[in-house]
Image 1 (cartoon, one colour):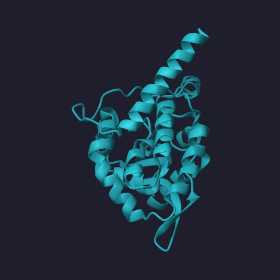
Image 2: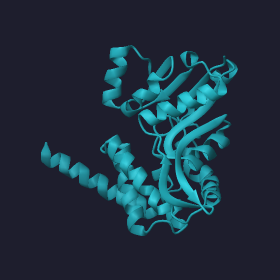
Image 3: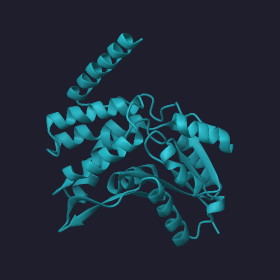
Amino acid sequence: MSAAAFFDLDRTLLRRSSALALAGSFRDRGLISRRQLAQAALWQLLFVLRGASHEAVRHAAEDGLVILRGFTPDKMRQLVAEAMEPILQPLLYAEPLQLVEQHRERGDCVYIVSATLQEIVQAIADELGFDGALGTQCEVLDGAYTGKAVRALHAENKAECVRELAASRGFDLAECTAYSDSHTDVPFLEAVGHPVVVNPDRKLRHIAAVRGWPVLEFRASAYPHARRRVPPPAWALLALAGAGLAARRRRGS
């Protein structure tokens, strides 16, 4: 039997949330309003600072599928392709891409496994040369999204999809590796014989220490000279929100 390596996306391959990073592109396509773009910018700030719980981010991601109603998978793939160089590439860590090459040298297949929309995850996987991707699937009727999730890759669902893939492709899970940053991915990490913790949240760091799981810290940018294009309103809100948070912290200290 062969083996595979499974990489989480947000904070493992990318330094930020992929879906939230694309909020500006959604605005350009008329999928969200300026107000929703501002809300997405605030979510991005909370995500970066780990001020929002993963459960809250999960609910936000699932609720966010509603905005896709009437949009088509083909248009989503085009949107991600156009956003790859200016928005997503600057967010890529260098270290996991090096690990991908090491796994390939050992003959392992490599996959991205994420709660992000399947079309987004697959487009990133294709761009980076992965063998495939598993993501949240949104229902499609008459060629367009309905806004309802038919497979949400969170917690145990993520692990179950990995087990299903392993069974269909003949992977020996005991020889497989999984990388993730979140304690909500413990079932995903437990599904393989070689769990690796990356840039972990506090709870996952503790779990890793107790179980003796290796911990990696990713810092380097895969594209250090890339300049990320972010809509001005988003950065304006981030600056205001960041200043507000800092002021509240000062008052509370």
